[in-house]
Every structure is written in C-alpha cells, then in structure tokens.
Length: 368
Image 1 (cartoon, one colour):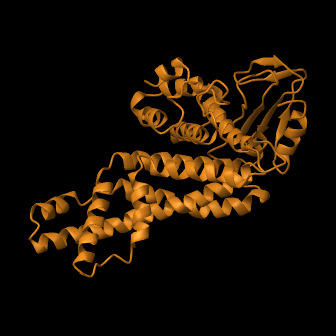
Image 2 (image 1 turned 180 degrees about the vertical axis):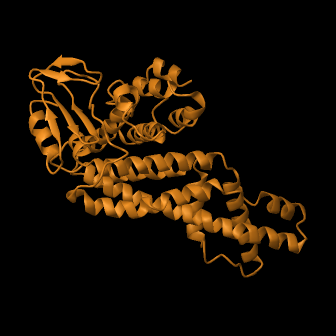
Image 3 (image 1 turned 90 degrees about the vertical axis):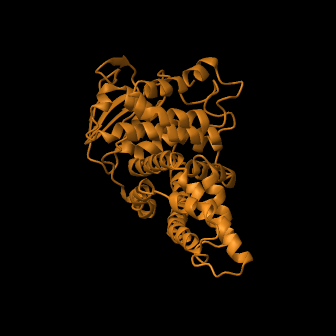
C-alpha cells in the first residue's frame, strides 16, 4: 500500500469488529519481523489476518484471504446470493461426474453385433440417461459462466483497486476462488474419464442413424441437434470448464471497454499472489483449520494464473507479468508430488503463453 494505506485500512474495517495494532515507524511482517515503514499497519480482524504491505516490498499484495470463514457484508449480499445459488449445486455435479462409469461394455457389444436388436436397444437404453447427465454438466457450465461474470463485475468496478476489492469483499473473493476450485476439480475428473466422449459420440452416431431410418428416438427431445453440437465442442476440450471460464473472462474484458483491462488482470494477479503468500508463509498456513484449504489454495492459484495467461495480452510467463511464476511453481513443487501433478499439467498444457519466446528458460525447465 502507498501513502493512503491508513485510509484503506479504515475503509476495510468499516462494519467489521477489529483491533488495530500499529507499531510506530515499523511494519510487522509474517514471522514477527519488523520493517521500517510509516505507512504500514498490522491488522487483526477476528479470523482475518491482513498485512497491508510496505511500499518497498516487491512481492505484491500480502494479506490473509479468509477462504474458510469469510461472510458477506451488506453490500456484497446481492451478488453473493446469486452466485451462491449456483455454487450450491457444484458438489453434486462433482459427485455425479466422479461416479460416471459410462456405457462402454454395452456399446462394444452393440457394435460387435450390429444385427442384434436387443443389444442395440440395451446400449441405447444405457447411453440415454448418461447423456442426460452430460447435458446437466454442460448446462451447469453456462450457469457458472454467468456467476463468474457477475463476480468479475463486482471485483473490478471503480473506484476501488483490485487489491482493495479483495480485501473489502472477502466473501465474493471466496466465491470466485470456489468457482476456480470447482473448475479444476471438474476438469481433472473429466480428463481421466474417456467414457464421456465415447458415450456422447455413440449417442450422436446412433441418433443420426435413427433419423435416417425414421425411427422415433426417445431422448432426442432432451438433446436437440444444436445443443448436441455445443456439447460436442465443450467435451472435445481437454479442460472444458477452464475453457468456459477463460472465454467468459476474455468476453467480459472485451464487452466492458470502459473498464481498463488492468482491473481484471490485476484482480487475477492479486489473487495468485495472495494464494502464494498464504501457502509459503508458515504463520498464514497455520491459520488454516481445514486440511483441504491447502489444496483449495493451490487449485485457486493455478486457476487464476491460467485465466490471467489467457486474458493478459502477453500472458503470465513474461518478465512483465505481475505474477511471480517462479514463486508459484516453487510452491507447487514443494507439495507432495502426487497431489500436484494435475495442477502442474494444467500449467503445462492449458496455458496460452508458456511456449512463447518471452518465457524464460528457467520457468520452462521448472515445468518440464
């Protein structure tokens, strides 16, 4: 924070019970170190620990974002409630995807015995309800896109900076994080389940054949041709939910010409910095009461890096990027390997600028 950090602190604390401890002329940093800077404050807001950084710290925003306990303030409630309706269904979607077994056996039998009507009917009967599930997943991606755009609108609006937004509107920041967390979990599950595309391809081929033969198709009303085309494009992506969010963020930027692109990219880079600092600072990490919060932070960090890389003109890996990519990759590599391989792969294969000439050899070798 700059000279206005005292004002920012005051505005952050409005409506929140808090105690402010100020060390005159010194800034208290994680670990109890003190650094001379008259513009710094050490704040303790119930469960929320926040350090407004000193002007000469280069590591960027440094505050604890309370992913476990943040509650909406009055001004956040409208957007928060809209997004909450969508997020309530997220866990159920993941459970359905996790239990998705596919109709591989029935499809193979039907293909191997094309003249056996009973096997054809059995395969069709197995695939139709599965396509109903795939339709539900796709429709949820559309709802998630709308929720993300609502959050981006709230977290990038004037007159506040992205850092001030994330500090003031912790509950909305938490929801943004939950969308990213869901997205990476969904895509991890989808990537390891080839049955999804096989089932949908069989459904479309069979439906096409039934139309040619004028056979009435139960389930066709569920997924008409136009919807089937859109679903096909969605599931053809290695990471369909991430692609949906990337496109939504890019569209948000292009549709809001009056809003500087920096408002959006700074929101993403700030979130990445906050997650990295919380993960690499033992004093912050010790405040997590739930073991899952570490993996939550890791997924959110990777999610915002990927969004930033897709939206920012030069991406996340260039020297001018506001994201400390070396620091973020190091945080990932410091975790148990099995727990982060999917996230490292997401950075390797779903980013846009990793292989650009502007990406340093060191970063490329860290991700090899």
